[in-house]
Amino acid sequence: PDRDRSRSRSYDDVAPRNKKPDDYGVDTMKITDDDAAFILGKGGKTKEKIARVAEAEIELFERDLILEIRGSKLQRRRAKKYAEGVMAQRTGPVIVHDDYDDGDLTMLMVPQEAVGFVTGRAGNFLRSIEEQWGTLMFFCEVDGSGGRRNKAYEKLAIFGSIRGRRGAELLVLSAVETKVPGYFSSIKEDVLDRDRGKDETGTWGTDSTTFQDDELSYALGKQGGTRKKLERSSGAIVQYVGQVALFSGTKAARRRAKEYMKWLF
Image (tube, rainbow, N blue to C red; front, side):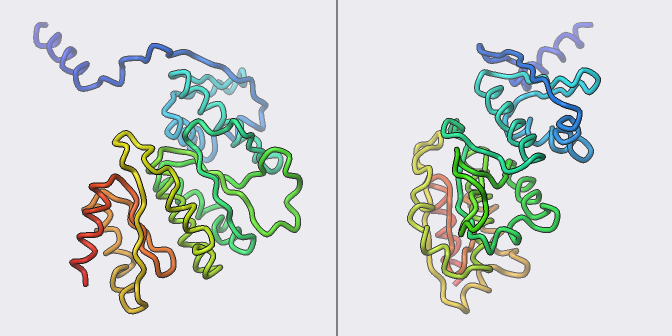
């Protein structure tokens, strides 16, 4: 019995996430039958995604059509917001209000002619980016901006951590650039400045380098293998948008990525 007690104690030591925050609580949302199916998604995937990005626990009681959200005040607020966004997609464009940003939102303008490409067949490309970067993404309208018709751009909302949002954003921009070459240069400064210093180290930022044509394919490697290696070994996000290499992360991670990049050439 002593052994059991020590085992359970050591389990608590390694699982501090069981300690609940002071503002831990439970919120419930009443939803419709159709919403429930939408929130669950294929094999419960959508519900899991909302929970993962919000860092909250989410339970769907299908008989009572109640969504139960547990977590800190901020986690609950985010989960509720994400669930509402997902449900709104069922009936039309999602409207994102000005107060939607809890330090978890990146808004990206996507040129109309690249929207289908970024979405992918049946939303597959967006879903794969969400999966890769732990984000939640949807095209939306901002408060009262009216219909979508004849608009040159669509707004893409990316929710998640500073790192997840940046990884997803750069992947989208990389795809957009292949469809609309030169688009990135028109928004480059905004992208580079975004979220500067807003991580826990206070050193978050983005640096860039421009490649010559022949260097680019080399820096990418087979199926992007070299890029992925650079990303893994440096701890920075490394992405190529057109001819530009972007390094996002803490100051130390960016320095490593640029150092390793030099070794390639």
